[in-house]
Image (cartoon, rainbow, N blue to C red; front, side, top):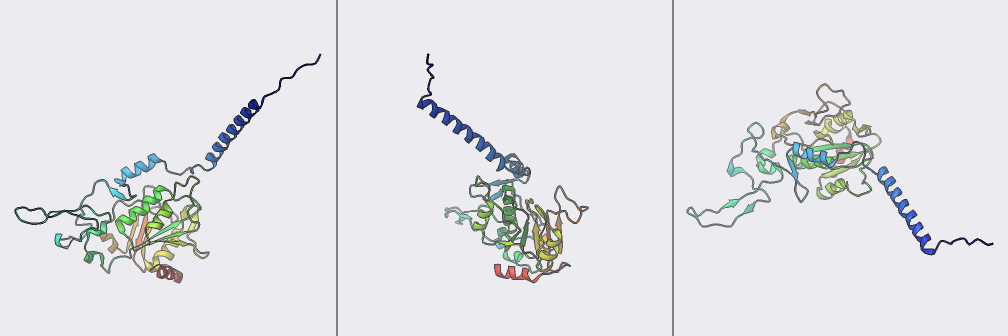
Length: 290
């Protein structure tokens, strides 16, 4: 007596294949997300929001940083400025003349994005100032995250430097989701953002994400002067009279005056002539940029 074996229909086979394909895609997506996920030290959105609240900053629709509570400069921060010497901001809005008792025009002004725009030329062209050049040292093949973008934008707003020299051993990479594109956006918007790859004879890095502060002091700042800013430093204010100092050192919450030589300060600003070694190729770099 012959036994009849039921056969699986065509639709049943197709359904099983679809289930296997879906399971494969789910497993592949989970593995890919795990491998391409953010590094352990990557700040979360909540951390970014906490930093913005801590420094009283906000980002507008154009990607610019603004302080939530603007306050006037004190006499100890900047020299006194008379109203008739104040430079008008580039984005000041002029209101049409309104007939009144005195017949004067009514002018409505809005705060300028750049802090230095509030000061006259006489105060900004002081020959005793330290050079308005800012250096960053980037070490390791990693993402240029939003916290680094905030650091550069705070420097742009508060200092409006002549040049920002971004030294790197490995240029920042973009994540698989194409989210951390802040590095290329800054380079496209600001022409004074200069990128320089470290040469073999430029020991700018002491390890992964660790700049060599000896290189910063003796190679970058000794001959030309300027300011080194740590990639995690977000400036909330920088008084203009600090540019008259021969040496300015800023320490963050994780460093202090008693830290070792390899620890990275928040910022380091000097005038030309800091004792150390001066390299000729640095002058070639700056001459090419200028």
